[in-house]
Amino acid sequence: MQFDFHPRTPLRLIVVTVAAAALSGCIQGNGGTAGGTTGGGTGGTGGTTSASFAAHQSLFSQYTDTTNLSNAPTSDMPPSGNAQYTGSVAFDTMIKSSDSSVVAREVMGDVDMTVQFANSGQSPITGTVDNIRGKDATGADFTWSAQLSTANAAGSGTLTTTESTINAPVVGPVTTRTGAFMVNFTGDIDSTNAPQLGTTGTALVSIGGAMFGSGATHSAGPANLVIDDDQQPGISDFAGTGGTYVVEKR
Image 1 (tube, rainbow, N blue to C red):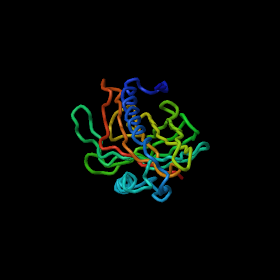
Image 2: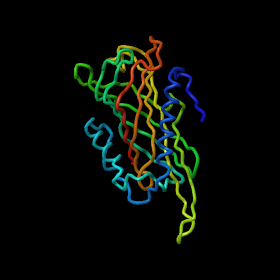
Image 3: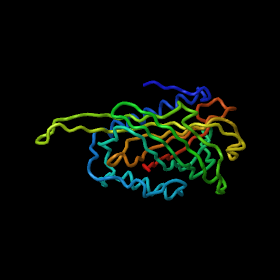
Image 4: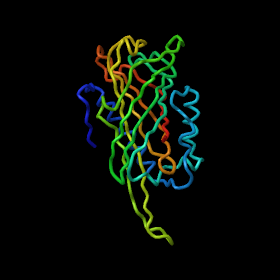
């Protein structure tokens, strides 16, 4: 696997990005073994953009319920074209890595992605995470004006579509296409666009997992957040805990 990074992306974040990609690879491997032809997802009904933390958690639970057939991994990925996916990414807490002190709770942002489809192999994903919000250490609400973007990372994320054909009894050859993705969003933070941290540096949010539902209606899975403080030597000076994401096709 090859990783390309925008010149503005700090070298210290590469280690975290590679680890996040490995996590997505594990998810892709697990999701690719199951069928997803039964039932469709409920994409478009959740309206996750600018969702509350509780609403995000509820939708995540809904979409990760393996007893619901509409959450089966996709086996009929679109062979071409593109689609917009919107949703949210959320973290239970954001901690300072040096002492594990909590600096914020219920941190979340709105996700907006454009996914390019391909018959097989890799295709690009572009998008942003913005409207980052939460509660600070005192419990007061905050909203950051910082925007994280794929343009500041490798330029785009990656959707990997795997096509395979089997000779099924009675019906003959059956072709399936499964899909999984990995996207990194990065951006600069400072005392103006992220005043609660009181520092300057770079934030990285990573999401990745399998596509679910007929026609790839939705996806839900783990998320990572790391913030590199320019004034500190560590790889991850602040980190998100309990991270999850949910996106739906529009």
